[in-house]
Length: 515
Image 1: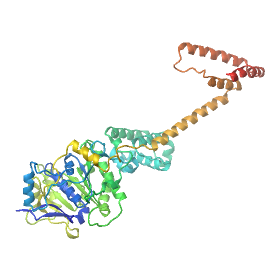
Image 2: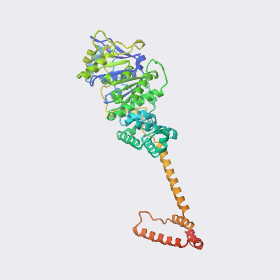
Image 3: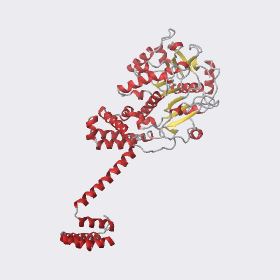
Image 4: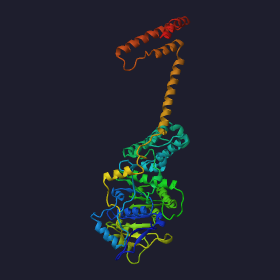
């Protein structure tokens, strides 16, 4: 295991071998380029390099192609000869086909081990982003989290949050005095958003057992870093859910990992594919949070690499944090494209031997311009680079191969079955049942207190004898019961006096006791 990751290189008109220094790999990076220019293969060879260096990796597989990391490439592949020629041209003497240790994950639990978090761990800021809430609605969500903390009600899954919002609506008068206005319309809007999230499959994200971050930071018996692949082809149908989940994961790493300063190699490398989804229509508070995480998580030993079509997709303050850059071709068909191309070229340290803007437009598939951090973290001069061929399989694996890998995984059985322990939903349900029982007893006591002694004795006798007639009784039975009731009421009316009470206690009272 070396100290650098070989990316590609040279030959005529190309740079000397280009390498990513592991010591600076936690300074973050960018992989950019138009569709079909080779970003996925570049991500694949970086994942291979980190894994071989003993660094765990987490990446999202948007198209399904990255599952090939789990199997070695084949000499019978149609591109084998091209791979061998490229390896020879760039001086990649160690090129060989090999697989990486892979763990598959899936929010829906279909193509990988289930990934869950709790509503509490997600927090009100990210959840508001996920639900696209207004400022007023986000305020009520903050109240819900505060009440849950004060009342000792864990928010684990969506039904916990839904039940708590109902309780807040029922007690909004008291809560408004303490926390500010709580409107039923805002609560209703949040509930509708939660319903949409349910329909998108969001219920599978929230619950227990929650993901243990230590399970993402493992190495195998040979010391290779585990490549954690999140199946995201279905997840991309809900892009806001996809972006929010990855941002939550990044935030959790930031919160939980200890400070390590500048390690010789990262503790974990995190690849954020389709990164533009994170920033599209994002509020400033969220962008500020991403910038803070990107700036500070480096000291936790985590490197973050954004993959997107254009550097313009990344806010400037965050783009400035990305020291290692691999830029594939950008197309310039419109005025906006030309502007983005020019801005992208201006972010690199110039190379006097060629024009950077022209090179970005002209590089072919599998080629890129690269700029890696050099000694003391100084950005390297931009170079044209032929990206090395991957050692793992190019393209997706079969469903049967995926099932075999899942069955043999160390994570098999740990997350497969969800657990529904006592939380806000069960606590509020128990409170409601207790309140209903207390109200029923109080109502019964009030009725008895309002009755005369003979009426109480008669009511008690009727309950004991089971003489009430249910709704399912026949019409004849209801008539008989009505007639008997009328007769009894007439007798009671006649026996209101003291003598009457004695007679009742002597005769009817004995009759009821015999019953």
